[in-house]
Image 1: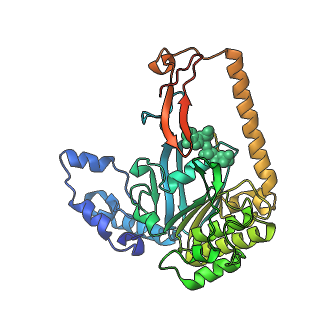
Image 2: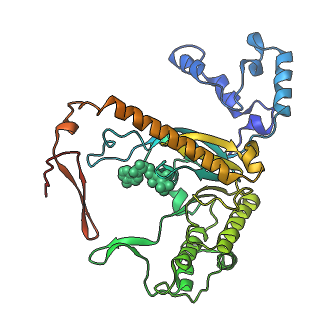
Image 3: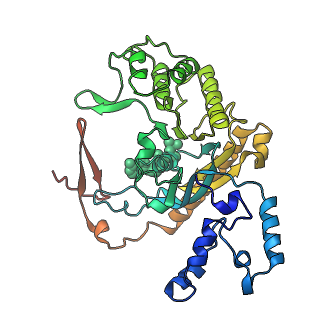
Length: 379
Ligand SMILES: Nc1ncnc2c1ncn2[C@@H]1O[C@H](COP(=O)(O)OP(=O)(O)OP(=O)(O)O)[C@@H](O)[C@H]1O
């Protein structure tokens, strides 16, 4: 990321100061300028000197800047990020709060962030938004300074990588969630991506303990998972989003992979967010922890500020968070029960008795039934 001149050299006025000096001091644009917060490295009135600044103030400002630790480079940031899954008409699903609500975080380069939360908290959705798989306003997410959905080069170059889910899909007349099981050797898959550094590929084969002669229709779930992870890590990512990918790995495979990932962040300055429900042995892995519940950010903290992590009690910390969330959820449900059912809003959505045909996927009709005692199937 380009660093403003006034940050790299605090005594220089910098580009921001030059631009600010050229802005009009009267008229509508002057008002805009006044409303804007001074950006990092932008010149203050004291910098500009003259009637509203003094030499003493200038010197004090420069000294303060010199004393500050160098600013961390941000790899990924969100600003009041919210996301709702769309209904068939493209509008947010009615009567449901956003799955991700008003989240603002900034993760520096080199961070290893553990993403924690109960089932249904919105972790996968958040990772997919960060991975550019769902569209959100450009200003609400920046990965390596760019909006991940719109800047498609981020993912096509491999700089931004999302590894999650299983290698499986619904196949007509074969069933749902059929694992990838063609008779393909693992070596053929691992050699199929062009431009991969052979040393990196060999290292991944070693870390993940892959036998290149495995044939993908004869492997176990854990072996298939190892090949899937290796494929996701072949390109030297700068930001990696991992969604519970270690679930089928044995203890050794998981430990070796986590050590490799930590090394990638420490040596190359890569940044990782890892969502998981498996916490054993992870106490020293994260540099940051992030806890979400009900689609909202509850905790976003550096690891060194979390005493339980320092004491090696990650599991009891997570249990405490989850029990508290469960208690709050049950209290809210009890309150709602006591109030009785919510009155109908009388909206068109409430009055409609219908099933939306969401289209066909492999072997089935995907439809959403609107809450209705007398739903009509429209084909
Ligand atoms: N495609 C979708 N359409 C509508 N709602 C969805 C869709 N996918 C997920 N949801 C809803 O979004 C909410 C968050 O789901 P998400 O998968 O992000 O949670 P999660 O924290 O990853 O959960 P888990 O730990 O169980 O994987 C859930 O209430 C879920 O029902």
